[in-house]
Length: 241
Image 1 (cartoon, rainbow, N blue to C red):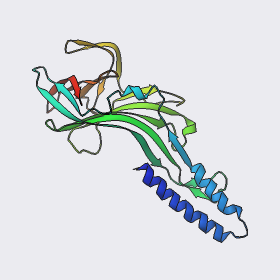
Image 2 (image 1 turned 180 degrees about the vertical axis):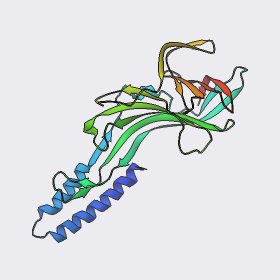
Image 3 (image 1 turned 30 degrees about the vertical axis):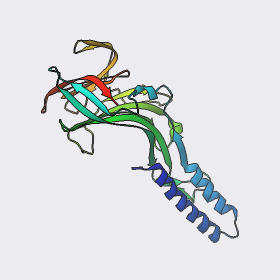
Image 4 (image 1 turned 90 degrees about the vertical axis):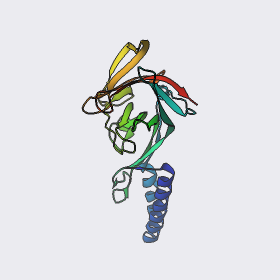
């Protein structure tokens, strides 16, 4: 479950203060008890886990961009309204005993960096996005290993909550013991609509493998090809500010 980081921290601080007060009032003969409760909740905060510096460039869309323009083979333009972001996702896990005092239960929380962009094509009634983020090998324990993974997301209709995409790219394994499978094929060079691009990732945006996407770091989404309605074959043309 995800919450806004600021509101989550305020909420947790509120509960910690209550626990601290209750702990002190119930343990007047043990003044260290309240301090232990505070320390336990401090330890439960895993902090902010940032992307590796090189991983941030994997999504290179400028923050100020407004639109992504794709064209079909007849030069018909399709406009995707852009939304770019670079923020922290906030998570919290189930309660577990504190390492300092097993009678104190804490709720682990952590914040992972994510950078990406999404595009809404109103005329075609679909959304597509790309995001690189930090993923933990074992939640909520970043010390068990982390990796930077890029996901391309696809929503067959605008407003659909769950993405149909399974395309992912391992950007940096870091110390993750077994990052998820790369659901994409890598090509050092790849020709698209008469233009040759370098370092292109090709994969499918849906489980039935009917919607194919081509992506590279320099341009981002290079091509979207769908074999189902609405059947389309769109190519990167430009971005607008």
